[in-house]
Every structure is written in C-alpha cells, then in structure tokens.
Length: 275
Ligand SMILES: [Zn+2]
Image 1 (cartoon, protein in one colour):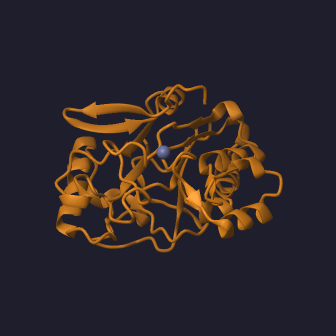
Image 2 (cartoon, rainbow, N blue to C red; image 1 turned 60 degrees about the vertical axis):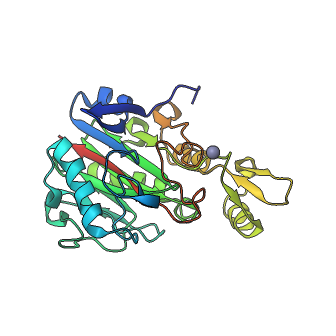
C-alpha cells in the first residue's frame, strides 16, 4: 500500500517463490502461502520454465514434472491438492479432502474460480497469468480461501462472494479476515476498450477512478484497486488488505503475462494451505 512489497521473494534451496509474511505472522506457522515465479521448472520456449498451466498447449508431461518439482519442495503429494477449474465466473466451492486430485490424473473440481476450506493439510491451488489472485485467511476460525479475479470475476464481485461464503460456512468476521491481492497486471499495463469501461461503469457507478483515459481513446483499468474497494465494501478492514505492487507484465524475469506475451505464455499458481 505504501510502497512496501507485501509478497516476499523466498527460496527453498535454488527454488524461488513468493509468500505473504503478514499471513505467516497472523497464522503463527499455521498457514502456508505461495505464488510461483516462472523460474525453476523444465518447460521451454514461451513456457520457460515453471509453467503450471494444465490447459496450456505446453507438453503436459513437462507441466506435471513442474508440479512434481514444486510439490517435492513443500512435501506435498501431487494428488492431495485441490485444483480450481477456472472459467472466469464467480462460483465459490467449499472443499474437503474428497476434492483433492491432480487434474491430469483425476479431475475432481469443475467450473470453479474460488475455493474455500477449513481442512488442514489441504492445499488450495488456482492459476494466473495477469489476472488477480485473492488470498483469504481467517486466523480466528482457521479457514482459508483463494480466488481468481480477472476483469469478469472482478465485475461479478468474486472477492465479496468469497467473504460472504466464509461468513456462512466458518463464522468468519470480515473485520478479522486477512486478504492479499497478489502479483497481477497493473494499471501501468492493463488497457481495455470502451466495452469493458461501459460495463464497469454501469456496474460500479461510484468508482470512476478505477480507470484512467489514455491518449488513444482507450482506458487503463486498475483491477487491484477494484478488488480492494469491493473487499472494503464487504466489511474487510483496509488495514488487513495486503496489495502486491508487482505488475506481471512489467516484470518479465519473474512472471508470465498473457497481455505482454499476446497469449503465448505459461501460468503461475497460487497456493494456500492450513497446517
Ligand atoms: Zn505494468
């Protein structure tokens, strides 16, 4: 928020990843947070190298190997993670260990962009290449969530929908909930046309300042801020919202970017798990 980066580059041996120190602190060792970099895997060319996108055109054996590399570092069993199946909608699924399964072995979850759980040792996984990762942690009731918010998910208010579902399922008090808005495309690089501008303005009349007008008549959209305002409206305390400054498009060394690479790119994953 004030220039300090809330996602910290961390490493296990030579394997680099980002985590969220604020969640670690609040969880007192009971929560693991993870956002992958594009480095440390075996994919090649446009997918180089830690491509975690199962539905990409990359060699799926390499993608599976990339997951094995990641899982090995964290002592996860590849079949014990719960994977989203993202379709740019607003479905929120409460998951338990019966939903765990690596999709290339057995797909257990369909048409779901957001996952929540209070089960321990059940890592939740979602995918990204510019869209906004939303991480949720209720340290009081020990529950977590993860959501994929592109412009469509943001327009459908997927963040507040996760908050409301956590209130229903776990008795979460939004005021005590921690939320992190992860590395994603920034206002600097996210250009949209009149159609998206009109849709957003129609949906969120009071938030014109999410956009800046460009010289070419198009608009820059600040998706991170859209999500932040929605979360505040849903009762999340501003001081508990941690926003990454990283723009995926600007930081080619660490990140894939769908916009920057014109769709020819790999995917990151976000993981959160209660220990
Ligand atoms: Zn940028």
